[in-house]
Length: 137
Length: 154
Image (tube, rainbow over all chains, first blue to last red; front, side, top):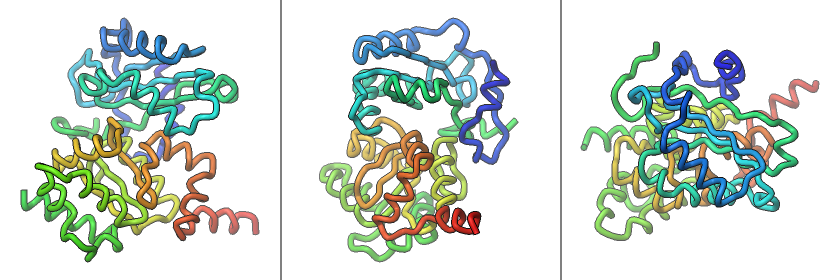
């Protein structure tokens, strides 16, 4: 699965080497991940909800829940612009985004759009970010 | 602080021709000074001063975040060189201020013609579905991808 993720790097324009996605937090799913899932379920009753903790690829301690990617597939998105769809997701997760979550990549699709390409993309690699390790290895 | 302002100004000089010499002095200074009030007005002026405005972590030359880098690379692909870029890592007030102003919780953020477009995901989507070429055209900017496509078809 890891290899598939790396191979699918959709934004491969980043010039530096991909920080390897370690297993930090991705296996069990911590409390933040659970909250994100529950709140999106409640707010948007999605047909599909895929959530990945991508924190392991960033300069944060192992087990962190800071960087996420989510695919939300909901008929509520019909007729809404991408901006409006993202705002709905942000609104549902306002607490998390004001607190522990630093990054949230969003794929907000209608069921028909999802069927065209039903996969959770991969985020571009971290480039060293806010502080700390600028390491590229 | 003066160093960070210097960097911000330098980034503007390089990347945002239209940003230089607009009324109100250095944008960074304005945003800072506005912390006690009127920040929304300051940011309003900031995002409208240039056709293409981006708020990044890092600079176009050295993005500090994969998502900010993706925005830079998309603009580069379209041959957009003349844009104003602000590094929110240089300015905590700007970092929070632009989130509040846009009602958008994350960086990067992209403005076209003073209108909020979205972050990395949305710009990438617009790049992929062709909307970005159209939006740039409305601003009088001809995407480099059009010329590339034409050459391909010859």
